[in-house]
Length: 283
Image (tube, rainbow, N blue to C red; front, top):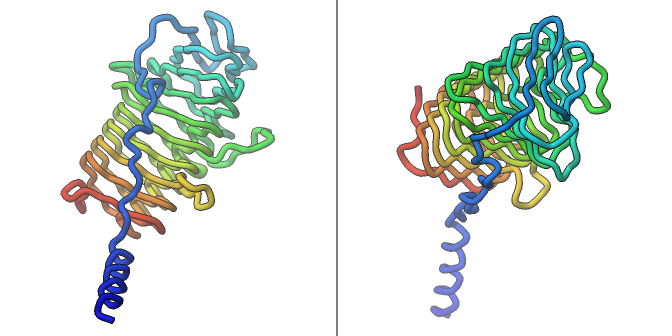
């Protein structure tokens, strides 16, 4: 009887100990980390049109359609323009932002319809900004839901600056995985600042996130191994109208420095929460 009780107690104790979140330290691929380039197709925006030096881009007014894999250097200023990326699901595209100020009055200024992966590389010394419209009315089969929107994997790297002024929904969003490895990034949005349906992973950069709802969110609750947030580095300043960090399945934070002011929870997850001590502070 005593032996049975000891076994039962051991089982209860094991059940009471929360399992650590999964190890996501290998989520950053070589493509995610690639923040350099040699040759690139040059794409220059202005209010009167888009100039292209190279192939893989078609132009309609102030909209640039990228239809081939490769590296594209984007710069210029346009008050009502758009970049649309639509390549094969096996193809990768690197967009180098070299001083681009792009607003779109009735949609998302950057919309990735399909790709394997797309990276935004913030060129050293550059200042770049995207601003969307408060109402989206441009016709797409599936409308974007973020100022910087991708229906596939999206990575941000480099050392330049990126300002995202979301006015419609989310700031930076993807239906798959969102990766951030560098840059000085400021995101303001009425809903979520950063949203990856499958995951959000941050390995570096200086981020200022101001969200009407959750600041960082991954909301896939159906697929195993998804719906997670992983933060391994970077400096984050978060102001959120709801939760600061919301991973539907898991939240793992192993490094970085995070200052939080949130109306909701600092970390919210239905699954495991593995947060190293001393990383998160309250503002």
